Length: 344
Image 1 (cartoon, helix red, strand yellow):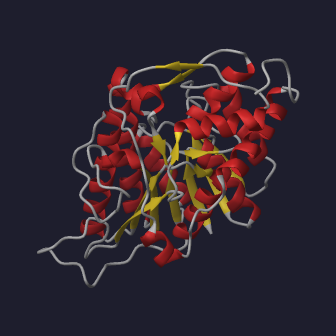
Image 2: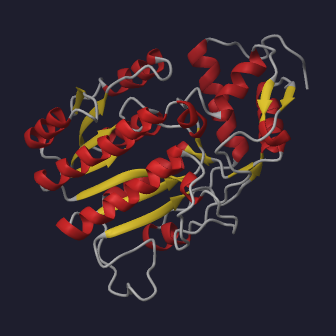
């Protein structure tokens, strides 16, 4: 398969690209290596991919309309997995224009490229944040998601609606994946597990929002990649049972699908910290803070559709996933085991 993966230097994108390259797929990896976090980490991820002869690296901004059109016209991938985006809920409060440029204009350029290049399937990253003000748990793709609490969430919900329009107008199969708090080796430095690990090892306090009363459906990276890889090879198809009288938000008469990709096991933030303390052999110092703008107290994924349609059910235990992350972190940053700090 010839596949274009946007965000190939990113956390999920680099893992997926390596999985596909090892399986013999031809991968075009697009990334602009923006400095929103350490470029050295992104370069290290790319270094692993450059070892494969079936990897083509492309340095390009999603907002570059002409460049994106030329890329699609020249390469004509069979499948596109669009993972590049301006990420983060809190960051979107302070830098809204970056989200409009990347997540809206950039996504439109991806859709146009798929349309004109005859792409067989577009898979794109959505987010659990689209559920916003919803309080019924677990979050189901069959529930409306029309009350976002951050601009980031609004752009991701807009992506889903834009994709549906293209599926309807041009018959482009599109599948949106609502990711739930992905973690693991090579993760993003702005995510909680990464920040907590760095602070604990430096004997610094960690910021714990909503005074620790937070629950997240932490999902290990290998489980996520398994789901994305299977979805990519199964283009969305029209749902013959779909009705405009009682519309299902997750399907359509058009070739359109939405899936939650989560662990279906929400974890208290305090339990995450305790598990991390055991993995590090150190105790954390907590700085309890109020809820942040745009954040939600809990996430919980209903993965029934993912299990039913694709046989994918994320199940990596939190202790196993955190242990693998800590092992990677120590190796990548040269931190010896039990280096300083306070024993738990």
